[in-house]
Length: 619
Image (cartoon, rainbow, N blue to C red; front, side):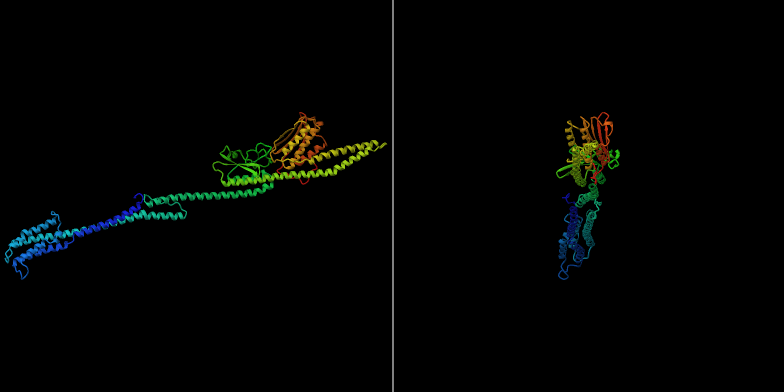
């Protein structure tokens, strides 16, 4: 019980002490007052014994006048003796025989019985008092006086004891009350004030106050519970405050990141170039979210592995870079080595770039392992992957639409040429044939035949060139990418050659625009056609290589080479190829190889986005 309720026990002890003091005080007071009860009567009776002794002596000296002045001497002696043994006196005398008061009372009674009473009985009535009688009376009265004094002293001692008990009880009660007050002040009032101050401070979000109460009573335990509660509340409050601050910072970062993504998405969709449109946005996101580098890989069906299309940080220029004036992704090796990569305590997050039913690529995000990646940052990156998926999907759609538009325009031109110029040339050829059948005689016949031969040669050449032009205009990219179209073209010419044509290709995805792809394909077809028709080649190799930022496409054969060792003059196919190269901003070179054969080489730098020109070149 004490260990469970020490405060209640202390209060119970204090109240019990006060009650016990009151009970003891009242009991002792009652006992003492009971012990001195009748002492006043005994003192009075004892005091009257002195007067009675003198009255007896006076009666003995005056003579016995019983019946006149009162009872006789013998009756008075009997009366006096009875008064000496009255109960009031006996109650005041202690029962123990060795008590001084009891001894004095016995001494008085003995002197009465042995000295004064015999002297009175033996005294002659009416005779004068003898010296012995006077001495006996005086000695007896002295003993009675001593008895009265002892009774008075005993009564006063009892009263003093009663006073002492009351004083002690009062002092003890005051001490108990004072101790109780001090205990209540130290153990109750002060702790309560501390607890109230802590409660008030907690209400004002101040968790620094501590009760620091010692002991094992209820208030001390309550104070310890308050201290623990305030510590836990402070920790919880600071944690919540830290979380709220962290969430606020994350929201601010998310808001800034969303603004960056929103503003950059316009350029991403309007620019139609992932590199220039996405890298600034990704670098801003890296600074805001504390991540990076970020890489974008596109899935190409012609490549077994995903092809890197974008990186935000690289110590050297990426392979696919088409703009050597741009240094957006280039960083120093020291900066690159500090980034969270696999060898530098980094973690990688892979996010799919997908549209419904189609996986377009993968977004690779590196972040520090010690900091981790918050959920808000992850959700932002997922939103980014959705934006990139939309941009890439729209880019592919636009590319296909431009290819289709370009092919349709060229088909229209081919149809117009076929319906107009081709028919006119056919008509002229028919007219030349009719003129040749006419028999013209005379001196003008040689001139006439020469003119007809020139007309026929010119018309045949024009008609052949027109057919090649129509075949060129009807050529279109009916496959989703240049590599597939080139393979189909090579398969076609391999059948015509009777032997497989070698093919090397390393162009990154989406390097060329539809216009650039069409012109590149047509130049390669022209080179293959020349090699198969005129070179008598047995080995033909086609290479389409990317040497950043330049594209080089070549057709090499081991045939008989060009006559004269240089580029042919006024060759219709070469003129077309050169026109196409100028359209691409590049050039075509046709030269004999040292080991034999001819090489047709096209070199140009692809542009970020070549739109379909408004005016189609004659080629």
